[in-house]
Image 1 (cartoon, one colour):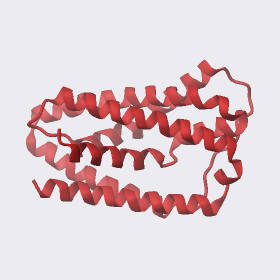
Image 2: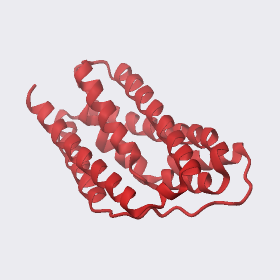
Image 3: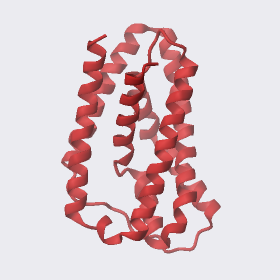
Length: 207
């Protein structure tokens, strides 16, 4: 795997992870209600959930790799279009972050399990990975080595992202609820996401 491909994967993953989906809304909800102590268990739960969804997706992609080069190529183009679609959607999302504080007392282990279940059982997670990962896989290289590198990279970023969201939400509640800040955040993320989709197409075309 080239450094260029890995860097592109890491950059696209980082942008995708900061999009406030169901998992991040759950993290923010707990942090708003119970403070910084939620950061570690929620981050671990999110990482485990992404590990579950990503592993299931990678196994399906591995089967596609062996089945048909044409199907795999089509999936890569669909994935690039999907990234651009997500970027446009995020850009137009506006300034709302629908996360209500969870004030009910919950143990760290229950928070971890809750985060794991929400992340792993979200149908969009597996669909997302199936569309996203083929952008960066090389059919000529060892699949399992690539899988290990991509999973380790994504899970590290997922943990850091959830941990960061929890800390920001617990310390800067006004920022989390500031429409202008969220609008700027969404538009920046959307632009980067569209760029990631275009870059993956250009990267393939240059080889």
